[in-house]
Image (spheres, rainbow, N blue to C red):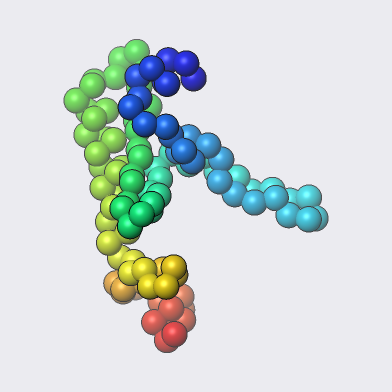
Length: 106
């Protein structure tokens, strides 16, 4: 973490941490937040990275990171925020007809 603190200009926040829930019945479901978007003061901050290993090609890793970040940005473009709530503004994929109907019927 000391090396990351030296190399990265901003703190990671939720990025790289766990997101999920713990239930009263003892169940747990967690995921590592490896692609994140956080809205602060009306600005979307996106974080993504690639898994760099000994034989990684830096250019390909950068392209992978950009693609991951673009996916978060595209998802955010499909949502409109009003009164602190998110509303879907684009149609969902056709393979989700029941969910799509329920969302658009509201």
